[in-house]
Every structure is written in structure tokens, then in C-alpha cells.
Image (tube, rainbow, N blue to C red; front, top):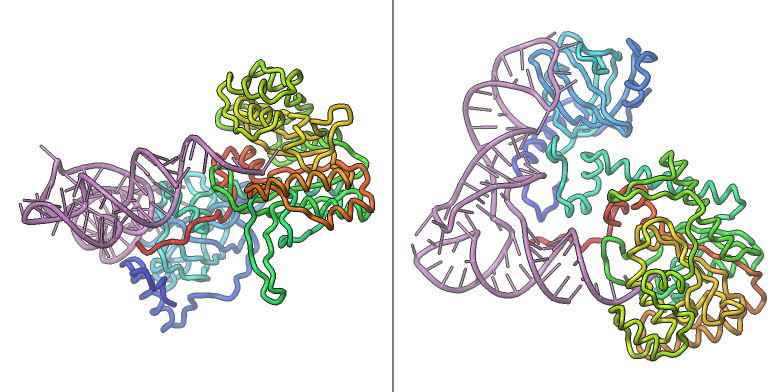
Length: 493
RNA sequence: GGGCCAUUAGCUCAGUCGGUAGAGCACCUGACUUUUAAUCAGGUUGUCGGAGGUUCGAUCCCUCCAUGGCUCACCA
């Protein structure tokens, strides 16, 4: 029953603890077991005609009290919003009225009363009786300005949720986005599956993993950086449409668009290619927007973005030519590629191949221009170790990424299903790894073995849920769409 | 990891050209039976992020540290 023992109790907290011990010595309950409710706050106002002069019971947190002598007004907040309480001494009796005056902001109470409208037209509850359900021992942040300090908001998200209604709304929308995405995929006969979060080999993406240790097996495991290789094993196994919505973990820098753990939707569909994945992506996202927001158009940071299909489709080579004038279709030697990149001010490393230089120029000079939803197609093979290479253009793959507001929100390809080619690609990654590239992929022998049994032609797609939610809720940091973003531990300084 | 900025009451913030600090909300006392950022009268609240240094004296200047924000780098 202590506060944080590192923390001094201030006067406000001491007062509340004294009130609590007073309650404990009396007949009053400070922490009730249950209160039967019949209604929530918001519907009383929305459907006032149905409730007028009806008796209702509801429960919530006291957010404001306005005392006027022998009558008081108070704001009660539940998950739907607030409703005003009107409590009169001659209705509840002198003792109960005095007890009400003893309550603190933040206390959770249950009330019974009738619904009416005040002279000013505010829907209110004329309280007949009330019970303290939970005594609150800490003062709430300021009622008008709320809680602004970002550090406190992220560390104490519960407080943020209590006092900042728009935060509750953001996370409600996040939940709805995921629900509609799931519903859409289930309607299309995709099977939701769960694959391991702890991997003996961290595969399926280019990223540094977190390492953990299993004691009984005495072996290190990696938190997964992507579910891709497991989901493709399921396609080999004969599930022809699967998806997973779950966390990935990457041991990399943090920024407004990177959190060490983030949520990814990945799906795989047999007998499909990356064109099918483009259609699926634009239909899925526009459908989700329509269902959740009621429109396919969102305003993000003053930019209007329209998710309605079809989205622009352009190859990486074409996009680079459009925005830089460099025609990589005609470049096949490193010297020229290097010189052209330099001409547009893009720094390239000595060991980069032509494809990597193309990718670099794209990232440095084109990405920032892609505001409206755009599919960038045909990525160089060097940066796409799991994608199928194009039949007539072996330096490139059947891969695309979707960009919105300069941010990658989806990555997809016609999956590489040739086990020998996949083996060679892995080997190349292993070489890079041995040369010191910590993000290069590891050899996964079992995945090769699976491909050797035969994986049908398959389209695969990954959508970064957090970044999609940011776009749809107009929030500027990934931390605003993750309930408990990764933080350093609180220090005592 | 680099640069810039921030850290003052429970919360939102002001402030001290170096003389140990203030407002609003919250809280306490009193008045008030339709208010709603209720109002009116009075009152309380602080290791001024931490540790050193300079100084007669530091919340303020300097150094280091901590945490956070923005940004660059890294990174799908």
C-alpha cells in the first residue's frame, strides 16, 4: 500500500491516504467488488428521448465537481464519454451528501438516478444514490490542459488515456483498422495463423535481431524480425492463403517511424503474383479506410491523401528517371552508375553494385516525392533476396513497395520458389554477413528443404500496421499509435 | 551515435541581467439548491532533473551525468 518507495508522498497524496484510512475505519467500502450498470454515458445524450425520466445505473470516474451549497454538479466519465451528475442534499440525505463532498477527483463511483435535462439543456442524472467503487490515491493532471508532457504520456499511458480523449480515440481506431483488415482477409478465405516469435535463425528481413536465451535447451534464440519464412513453409504445406498479424522485433535505431517492436500484417497467396498483391493492397487499404473512417480520403499533416484504387504503378527505374533524369535501363557498368549518382548528389559506397546504386538513388531522390499512394515496382535483385527474379530481366525482381506520404507502408513480391536460386541468394547473404554486414540474412537450410518439396507460385505481402494507423489517425510519431512504446527505464535523478 | 532544445508545485506554464520563486488549475476553509474551464472571499503546496565547479552567494553562469523532444546518421 505504499506509493513507489523511491517517491516522496506529496500533500495531495497524503490527504487521500488519510481519507482512505478514515474509510477503512468506518463502514464505508473504498474498493468495491462490483456495481451493476444499466447504461453508459454517451447514449443518454444521444438518445435522450428514450431515457428522459428513466432510472439508470452507471459507473465511472469523477472528473469534475462543482459544488453549490446544498446541491452539486459533477462530471462522470466512462468509456463512452462524460455525463453530468446532479446531486441534491434533500434527495440523497445529509450524510450521503456530506460523503459525496468528501470524494476526490479521480475516484470511481457508481450512481443510480433519473435522466433529465438542466435549464441550460445539459443531459444529466439526478442522483438518488451512489457508491464509492474505487478510491483514487493520486491527483489527476489539470482538467483543462490535460497531460502534455510526452515523456509522462508515454510512460504513464493510463493517465494519458484518462485525461486525453483524443488518445482513446486513436487507439480505438487502431483496433478498428486491425479488425477490418482481419475481416476483409477472412472474407477472402485467408486463414489466420500464428508462427514462432522465437527463431533459431532470424530470417525473412534485413535487420539486426534481438537475442534471447532458452535455459533448458541451453541455446540462443532470436526474437523474430519477420514471419516470412514460416508463412511460406505453410504455403508449401498446402494452406494456399494465410496471414498473420503480429509483432516483429528489430534491434535498430528508434525514430518517429521506428519502434523496436512493431506490428506487421503478412499474407501469402498461392497461385498469385505481385500484380495480384498490388490489387489486394489497394483494395484492402481503401476498404479499411472506408469502413473505419467512412471515406478513402484522409488528411495527413495538411496533405490530402486518397487511398481509392487504382494506385499509381511505376517501376523503380522509371521513377528514378522521372525524378532524376538518370536512365538506369541503359546503365550496365558500375563506373557510369557511380558517376550518375554522384551527379545528383547521392553518396555511394565503393562496394555497391549497379542495382544497389539504383536503390540508393531511389531512396535519396525519389521516396520523398511519393505522397499519393504509389507502387514502386521491380526492385534490384541485390536488395531482394527472397523475391523471384524477372524472367526477361534477371537483374530485377517481381517486387514492389507501396509508398504513401514518402513512407513505405507495404512490401510485396512474387515469392522466389526455386530452391537452388534461393540457396545461391542465401549464400550471397552469408558472404556479406561474414564480411561484416550484421543485417545480411542467415542461411536457413530447413527453408531450402521446404522449397525443395515444392512451393507453388505465390504472392506475398507485408503491411506495416503502425505506419498505416499513423496515416489514418493523422499522428506524427509511431509512439502515438503504440500504447506502450519502448522507453528507457525511469531514473531516480 | 552527432547536433539543437527542454527539464521550475500533483498538472499547464511564467520568472529571477546571480541575492534560495510565482500564476492558473488541483487541494484546504467559508458562502452558495440548475452549474458546466461555475462564481466569490481567504489559505497551503517546491531537494527550480542529478552531481561537481566558479562566486560572499547559484534555480540562473560553467562542466559532467540522466531522461525526453526535434533533427541528422544508421535502419525497410
